[in-house]
Length: 261
Image (cartoon, rainbow, N blue to C red; front, top):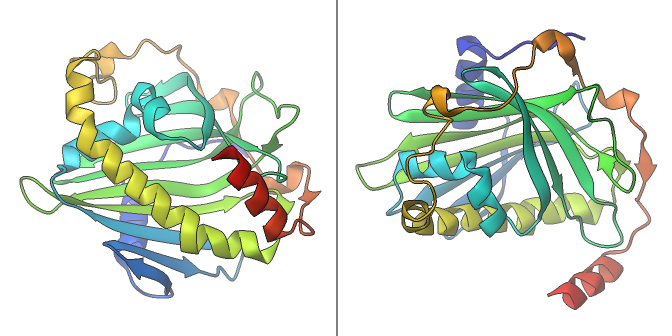
């Protein structure tokens, strides 16, 4: 299927999903973080939505943190690698991201098309998986599929903001139920708090690291090679290998995590 760069209607629909309570079930609410889950009738892949209230962090700072791949390497401890592949338009690009899964689960990676839109006091970033001919699935990784993932940042005041994160990802594997439950109860809230803490430290870090460089805000700074949407195709989940990890025990994975920490 051909790739289409998201337009205003796509961003509007994404914002509505972030803000609407309809069809969502609360799974976690503590310390300013809320997690909801939603089963999709047309898909076996669950949607997860999160919200965190960020005191003393402006919406602009959160937006910069989520864009800045150089800074991400400082705070995203689950990340193995990330890099930009090319740009499609002034507000859309293609990138690669890989992350660590608890041992003995296999690590996952993505190739996604990402698009962003500042709109008044709101900022949005959304992505979905694409196929790029020069970036096929890698050995030792499971190529996962983002059906829709993104952030909505809303300004609450001159000094505070609220961050929503919505994701529907097919991990391409028969994962045990404990993994799915753990994502909503432990992994997701921890990830949101990590973004918040990173955002508190970002202004000071950025002052020392190319403070004027923000290609997501100033397109003339973008030096990525140009890519045509015609070079990409939509990454369909059913075209990728499925692996069965449903027999992995929680105790075994927990033990391996304890050894790493």
